Picture: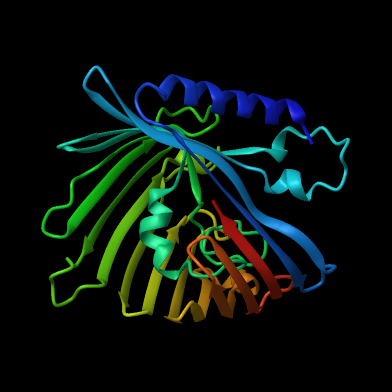
Length: 330
């Protein structure tokens, strides 16, 4: 693995911590998650699946409140079996962002950040460890939304009458010939604690992708629309998310996907089940249609330590798996 990357990141953590010391004590946090996974047509593997280290905090500078976060993922580096390998892609920065909370909402400047589109519109069906709901989870593939976003400026509104919204502008990571590769928005409604519908939430949002970011020869912009609804109360969780990717010029990208999940938690045990489906709009792509079920049993000993067993069964080859693992957060 590339030790220069590790050293540079650690130096960044230290400098950020020192700079903020006069304002507030930064919090160093992390996560180590490992599993034994038996994936269809793959050798059984003992591996890390989510290893992170980060620092976050807040301070006030010239009467401006700033929240900061710098987080890196080490999963690929941990799983690298060649200690002499020099691979710059092993360490991934998951978050490097500044948030400016005001009475008018929160403004964000984020070269890299967890995707609020993913958290808000897909979080309701993201209850598993191995079969996550984001586009490239490494095992199963249903939805098209990424877990993180890059080159983002965003504004999130205050919550009013249960409603909250966000708009963001993403410049993309390459020279596509346009200043704005992506424009996104979402609106969420959440019932208040004293509301008879407490525990109910719903949201809808879109990602507009400029034609030049879709493909060099694309004529039309692409649109991804997602809607979600969930209910959580007394250990019961029910969630659903629908996604439609509208890429009419490209049959391999034009599809609709959805997921339905249910879980129940009692005395630290959680039993969860989900059904997912992906269907292409063009019949010529039907060989890539996919559906599957996921079942999990999780045992949480406290808020930091959790063990799980999870089975996913999908139509497409190489996407079914059985995994047993543990996750520790600190």
